Length: 333
Ligand code: GLV
Ligand code: GLV
Image (cartoon, rainbow, N blue to C red; front, side, top):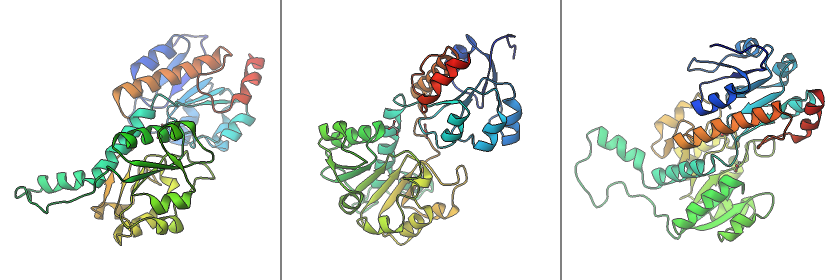
């Protein structure tokens, strides 16, 4: 790709929608990893040599070791709302801005959470497998009965934007909403959501949706004790991060039908999936599709570009995770 000399370099670790690339090209000399795979850490280090910025994916790990070698880097513009792939503390210490893509993916992710919820409750994926296997023998009064949503309780863990958007969909389906978060949330309360402890939420909910970011406080938030509190008819939906749930405990609970089912978009060792999941009919497995709509990904592409351009210009990016570095950055320019 032709690059303009004198312009700061930015590297995009995977192909993203063209509108973002175009915007970046107005300000940067842009290079893109055109391969349909993640680069290894040594490859990433090589590609980022001399780069001002990187448009990174949630699968790119920016740990302190890598960051210590990226002397020219000023911005990690993450193509995701989650930024657990970046050691933000180490980035801040090195004066590197970290940005993300909140808001633009809220509805898409909440839609996917509900898609999984319906798929599990109404056994849609399991039904699809039955039909494809040629085992559909005609309408039957007792075939593949599932669960209603109306009148049921949905417990939402995490009252950020996505959690609130899940609540609004729950309300549309006539569900009772309870939520657990660090503090009361106006959006949730407006939707009729009741603030609850995690224990109350786990004990009362028919459906549980996880919508927290991954950090030290939420890693393994749902473990053995928590799953034991759930109702036997509980259905767990995870569109957050795999590590929020102890996967082995979940698998054991699904096997023994201690809970009714799960709908997962995220996994502990992504993209590796624990093969025990494949043997279970009461789990629906999606390949991390939360934000995967045309419109949302285009908006994310625009936002990652705007975040990077703002840092270049010494302005506050639309979505910055560590604003404390900004003063230092403009001072350096
Ligand atoms: C996707 O998982 C994201 O964090 O945007
Ligand atoms: C992040 O978790 C969000 O709700 O946008």
